[in-house]
Amino acid sequence: MAAEVLARAGVSVTVLDRMPSPARKLLLAGHGGLNITHSEDREPFLARYGSSADRLAPMLAMFTPDDLRAWCASLGEPTFVGSSGRVFPESFRATPLVRAWLARLGELGVRIERRQRWTGWADEGLEVEAVDGTRAVVSADATLFALGGASWPRLGSDGSWVDAFVDRGVTVSPLRPANVGLRVAWTDVFADRFEGVPLKSVSLTVGDVTTRGDAMLTRTGIEGGPVYAIGAAVRAGLDADGRCTLLVDLRPTVPADDLADRLRRRRPKDSSSTWMRRTLALDPAAIGLLREAVGRDLPDDPDAMAALIKAVPVEVTGTMPIDRAISSAGGIAWSEVDESLMLRRLPGTFVAGEMLDWEAPTGGYLLQASFATGVVAARGALAWLGR
Image 1: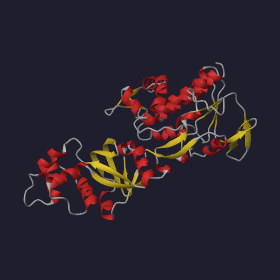
Image 2: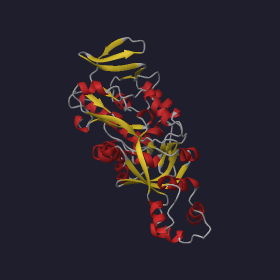
Image 3: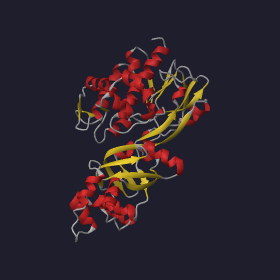
């Protein structure tokens, strides 16, 4: 995106790409349907970026979700809004978009040099190593880094850039997994029976953060959209004492008193499972989670049972590793860059995307901010170059 903005302004642009072909992470993101942005109103949209919302707000105003949708349409890929508010190309895939985009960049004169890995700075410019081990020094009037975080390292973004920036005095927060599954020490019985089974329409709470949706039970824990959305709160809890309690509300739309009233209709011969299923329509996975939390013997008291259903405690012991994460948190501190994303310690050097210390849930928010920071950094480079 930065290359396109720069080339449109008449700048000679060369992209040095570590991988054999460009845009591999975007292609992976579109493997099951490219959710490129979200149609949410501005205020709730910005809130998705948590503590980085204030810094990202002017950038997301400079290149909005509507701008991104118009850009897609200009490449022959009009978009549509799904039932959840997420935005997708009409083809639903990333491949046609990437193909058209690369053709446009070629028409604008952008050179893409593949299998070129940046290894650090030299007195004359940037040190670059080719796949055959050949080293070269590349000089430029302005440099823009978009090296990603550390998730999906096989696609190129492995976080190996961190040490070189730290050596230059740049403050970098540790790269950590975001939008990632959580580890839970299920019993073998529970894991054997419910691995791959969803918990439908639940709410999840950690501290004062609550999300809703469908979560997926795995052999080693739990994952899915609502799990990813509370990732920052889970990490904070794990940092505090190594453990974190996740509270699962199995019936988030029904108040506890109403649940208790329904539970009082228990028939004398109903087992606990039949009681849950008949009065509250809880499925086997939900009932299994209740037993996992308190043992085989569920409370007989309706009020106690209702309270448990509204807050099933699940002890989280950690997250899955960063190479299993959709994205990463951490990165170059906001204090290290100005409003145009130029590094204060390295004038003429700009950064964009997941290299910066921000995170967001899935749903189009990650890609939108990555595109927007690319636009902002490119415009900053144009200002630096006097264009």
